[in-house]
Image: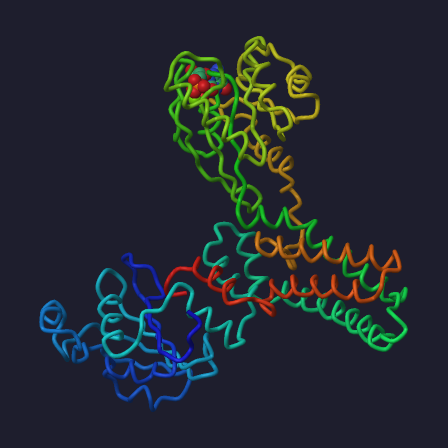
Length: 474
Ligand SMILES: Nc1nc2c(ncn2[C@@H]2O[C@H](COP(=O)(O)OP(=O)(O)OP(=O)(O)O)[C@@H](O)[C@H]2O)c(=O)[nH]1
Ligand SMILES: [Mg+2]
């Protein structure tokens, strides 16, 4: 997969109807391949970098056998009117020669253009291969390359902000700085070890231990902020739960602002889980309406309830809907038992009717700590306040929290946790006056783990795993 010698091509845009589509070619043969299909005022191979050329794309002489050739446009047939951008190495996305064809969007133009470029000698790019080349050629480091996919997939403003900051290299710069300090510490310890070889090992001096502890604190800070950053990147799941007929589906519809779930006066209406995404403080929260929790002999309802239980397990928190207009019953208490240990926000519903359940009572039901918001799902009253309370309970309310340098990817979090563990062992060893060799060994491991994030220490295997998750054309 890590071949750089050949020329790759792929559509960089999706296939739907659109004004434009872009087909990208990269590699040493990019200009030649492009010239085989481009008819304009100048040959692209004679064009300077960063120039635009207008012309026509035409089918090249086909290399396919006669059977295939019949299906393809004959040589010289016009494919589309195009604008071509030329980027010469190293001033391009991949640092190779790159040619980008802008053709008309829709089903056919890009597809035929790509087929023609492949027939002229390009190879179809693998998933993420343009970005992989940008990484291998040193234009981006690994964390930045991964941010490309995050920018593309960002579904909220904050997820986008986070991805852009990583793309700009802010996380990388911080980790490089941390890595350098650690490398200095390793070098100092190793120098002393070498010097003292004959004496039989040395202890690590106090100022080096202090430096290592400083790095450890920085990693701790990054990791502490990572769960919020991860929520920003991936979104959170919150199921609406409660006994049947309390108004879960009604409240779900009110929260998503759409009549998505079926509402009926019959208890046990909802069986399948219905999910919808809302934007809460710039973070994607997937709400799901679930089957009301109760003991039931009905097999289909029981299947629905099993799904509810799974949703409770998977959720970052639960929104517990309680009917405030009817006395609490055994079913409410068994719901309470099932929600033990979960983060809960209570919606005390049907506040348009005479209240029977007091706020304190509802709170006591959930163990005393959960916030309670009185709402009327059918009238849409209290729903904004409920949204705000839920955001607060999920720890999302801090609009000012900086995402400038944040670790949000599970791979990065895992690597930095490993780095921190190794550092912890190194610090313990240093404090216990263990020989410098042992401390250096642990520090080296921490350094390697940090290097996995930026790609300084990335194996081919790791790269394959990362880039195979990209789509073709990126
Ligand atoms: N007065 C009043 N009625 C409500 C309110 N919310 C829901 N209801 C009524 O309560 C009944 C049940 O509502 P649903 O939203 O289907 O309740 P559910 O919790 O999803 O019920 P299951 O799916 O059976 O578990 C319906 O008749 C709703 O119109 C409310 O805020 N005020
Ligand atoms: Mg329902």
